[in-house]
Picture 1 (spheres, rainbow, N blue to C red):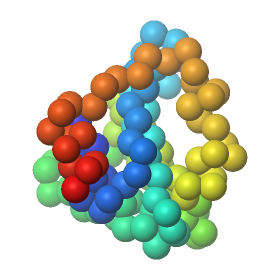
Picture 2: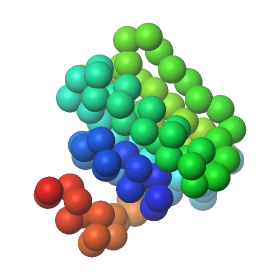
Picture 3: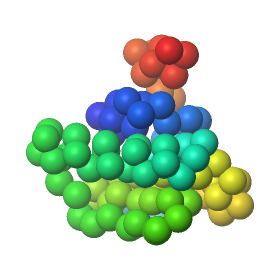
Picture 4: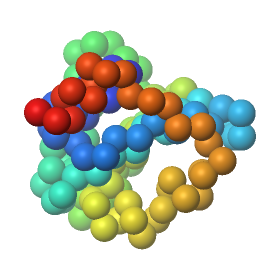
Length: 115
């Protein structure tokens, strides 16, 4: 949940946590979120990397496109997908992984979404 806290600091929109460990060996969870502009997507990505380092959360690798349409941070057990709104709809990760269990966000994080 720390990763969700990190992305909400930069006002990531529509955060979703999918548990995929029972349907894939790729990782245990996907955290998916959006930004309304390329600049916001980049800010979310950079904040997540910075706070991961500060909090000594190991990252396996990152993927970065110059247009900031779909950025990714692989934390071994968790993969964070940060999309530009339109790219999220286009790629449809949530539709592709529709068999995955959706994990509810804790109430304290839901409160941050409303702020």
